[in-house]
Image: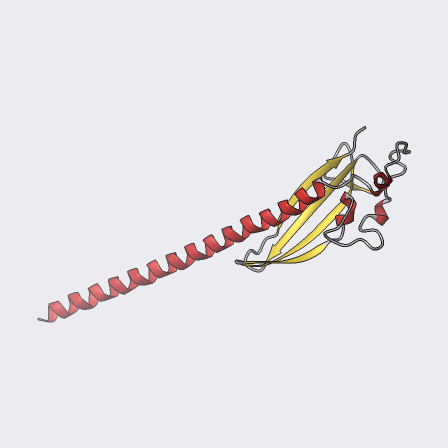
Length: 162
């Protein structure tokens, strides 16, 4: 009789440790799924902003429909990139208006904080921001969430050519 009680206690210990391990695995998988969902959502939000900007003019100077420009001298100066007076999101008319844009986007999975940087980049090294006006502007969209400890960053290169 004493051996049966020992078997029951031993089986109970094994059963409950298996249940705890299974519970830990399920919770870990849930966290991974949630984090993956937020990464996809963040990438989608960033891509949406880039796609909006792709439909805009390269620079404010082209909004007056003139045919002659002193390019790239006439482009917006690096320290003036951002929305011009009276412009606000989503009614931007050129790419660099997105510079400095911050938004809070609510999703079913949680809130996402979006920050956008636009600037000129070196034609030989597009990862290098420069202050000189040029034919290449890069947009960097960073999306942060509380669920994912890392930000999702998307980059897009806009080129002006005649």
